[in-house]
Amino acid sequence: MSFILLFYESFALKLVGTVLACSLYPLGYIIYNIYFHPLARFPGPKTWAAARLAYVLSLWSGWLHRDVQELHRKYGDIVRIAPDEISFARPDAYNDIYSNSPGRPAFPKSKLWHGAAKGRPLSVLNALDPKVHARFRKAMDPAFTEKALRLQEPVVQRNVEFFIAQLDKLASKDPNGAVVDIVQWFAFLAFDLVGDLGFGEPFGSLEASELHPWVELIFASIRGATYGASLKYYPGLSWLFGLTVPKSVMQKYRAHWSYAVDKINKRLEQKEEKADLISMIKRDDEGVKGITLAELHATTSLIIIAGSETTVSVLSGTVNYLVKNPAVLTTLTNEVRSTFKRESDVSLAALKELPYLSAVVQEGLRLCNPTPVGSPRVVPPEGGHVAGHWLPANTYVNVHPGTMSRSPEMFHKPEAFLPVRWLGEDPAFAKDQHNAVQAFSVGPRSCIGKPLAMAELRLILARLVWKFDLYEAGTEAGRLEWTSQRTFSVVERQPFDVRVQVRTDVLAAS
Ligand code: HEM
Image (cartoon, rainbow, N blue to C red; front, side, top):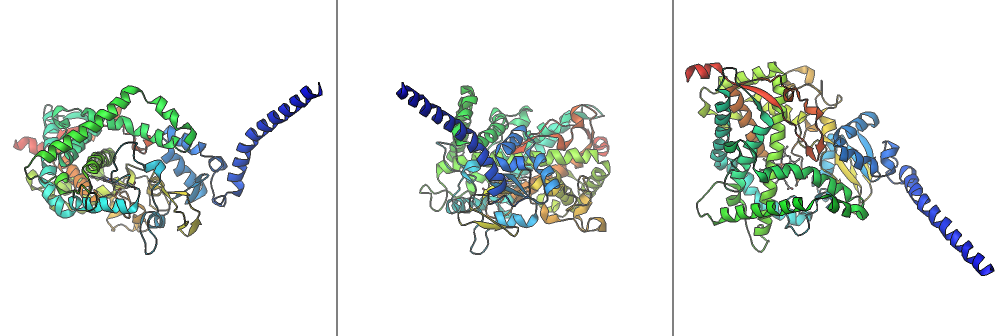
């Protein structure tokens, strides 16, 4: 009897112990995070400091960019947004986090956000080791210089020419023009253009007036990839992601990869000289003085995504603001039309000399940053300083572009689309902090495609307003507010209708 009692007593004790441990551990973890963690001295909401959950839920909702912006408004320019993450809304944090400085390399990327997918070769984006990454950049640099761009200009011009011709076909059917979803049309163009440069031929989207399935899968997969990465904060739960992805989607992923590999291999088999990216990226099958064939497959696919997703967002957002600000649109249109008497005069070199066009592009990059959430890095094992603050190893750090772009402390009338702020003429904007806008980021991992992107933005906007008068469409999709869109790593763009009318003096002449 006493033996049985003893057994039950010890069982009951163990049960109580287990229950207590199970409930006390999370409580202890939360109390530690809020009050005793080395980052506890940084301001921020306790709910976000207590556990990763608040951050992950915000990320999953698509409103992380807006939530963090609100937290910065409330708590200041340095905010703790997770037990182990600090968000900075300070221009000086850019260099501290992302740039190399003497004796102190840029903070590394984390495996969690940027690790390569299982079984896939490395691309420039997920080459986490700085030495390997430097090898990629050295091999890729020749394809992205101003000199390379001059050689690539005919490819760029050809695609933009076709874009204008296709819109012209639609718009010239009716004297009042045509209502088009300009976001779609920019996507057709941007993917065709970068496909032409990367795979050696366009996707045919402009021709067919529809997106190629390869491109459609990209749109569908970015949100999934964001969910997948965030689950890695909970290593025990990552398997859940596998369960949520249907087999058919996995098959499509594999087909997507095979399509890219086939395209690149076919391009490499062609002997003709082409001024495209593939011919300018340095190859080395030993992976010493250039990148291997497998790395080229992964990197070219990435270039096509990185080089079009971003450009489409900036173009769509900029046109959204332009049609809602007719005075700005008129100033831009006048500058372009008075500079170029013929469409064929519009060259990349000449466009660089147009101050108002450059200001419009800068303002577009400020208010329509395609990645308003930024790109996190991790403090290295020896710890490091950001914006004058010492941070322990493994702290996630991020500069939050969306907050700075719309900060009333950094920009006069921050929510208004006012390119004049970039011209340095109006004293009202004298205190604007231009260095708070770094849409291409800084340092060794900043955007390699910046010269090409700037050229595309200038050329496409200039050709559009040279040929067409643009107006608000008056449809449901024409009322889109740029800020009403969610973000899953990149802005999840919604359709935006614009009325595109062939300019009357051109109609009369033709
Ligand atoms: C307006 C257009 C663009 C914007 C705003 C933009 C922005 C950025 C940013 C912020 C990064 C750094 C990402 C990080 O730190 O993780 C980046 C990287 C990159 N971008 Fe762009 N980008 C644009 C256009 C392009 C174009 C046209 C190309 C090429 C055709 C391109 C290719 C790349 C590549 C390959 C990387 C990875 C660089 C590396 O890891 O070393 N981007 N871009």
